[in-house]
Amino acid sequence: MSKTETFAKVDKAMAEGEYWRAKEILQGNVHVRGYDIDVYCCLGEVLLKMGDKVEAGKYLFLSGVRKKEYEQTIELFLNRYSKNADQLLYVFPKSARVNLEAYPENVKELLVSRGYSKAWGQLRKARNQPVPRTKWQKVKDTIFGLLIIVLIVIFVIGLIEILSNGFRVIIKWLF
Image (cartoon, rainbow, N blue to C red; front, side, top):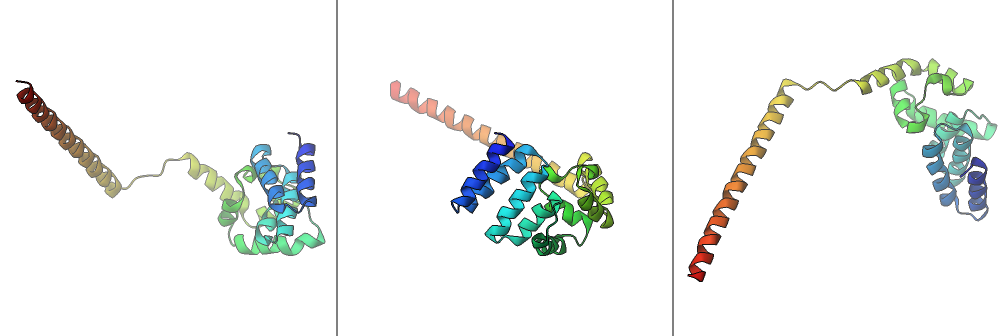
């Protein structure tokens, strides 16, 4: 579906008072279209009309569109989540976790001023490295593995015992 068709569906849903439907359509497009500032702005506006100011602030902030009526909502979002850059990064939708250069200039400036580029680099490195396991975790994993093996052996022995006794009973019946 083209972006024009998507916005036509959203407009129709809004005109019919079905804000929830407009929200669903746009949220699906956030995942499909990736970081698209038009979709983000429209979703922010829908969420604002629904009264979800913090979530609306997130999408309006990421869209880069600044209007007087958005200022309070964007500030609410930033005050809630941007105490440090890591926290702000984690509340972005996955499609908005892009290279810093992909953001609109005003978004990029604010993110850099709050240490975002440093946090982003650290997060990307952390995601590509396995989490080191402690000695205690290795011991627990070994004990758990041995316990599973013991339970399987007990199950197999029990199954063999049931089957052998079952055959004896059947043979007694037959002869």
